[in-house]
Length: 168
Image 1 (spheres, helix red, strand yellow):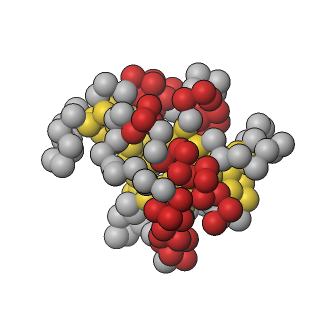
Image 2 (cartoon, one colour; image 1 turned 30 degrees about the vertical axis):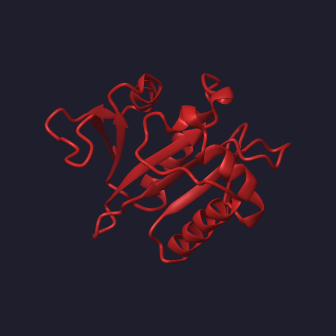
């Protein structure tokens, strides 16, 4: 399934995106605030893509690559995942190559995915976990009307802040 916004195409990633997934997921600037082991090579990037495809088939994740319409180059990803058992809550995740930061690209993608999550998937709440030092991510979430929940703590990663957005 392909989604589009004014400037972007949000589409399912495929095996053809292996090189770009490797580039995005191993980018040191992106990974600075994330707790993940970046792929070492194309094989690990391909394994990630195949895992996402399996999770998509099982309705465990809504994962899209972010592209410009005139290019097949992946510039970032966005997802809804960690769905609650009753499918009323999900977590938002996103990443964007640094050269595209500050251009409103992720705001556009986030707004589309939030709308889809609330209106098509019937979510009641979308959460986002971000490192307290990731000021760009915090600004993005605030711009998208997420509210910091000061009463919740990420037990696994105490340096994370938890933001929430409830369906209006």
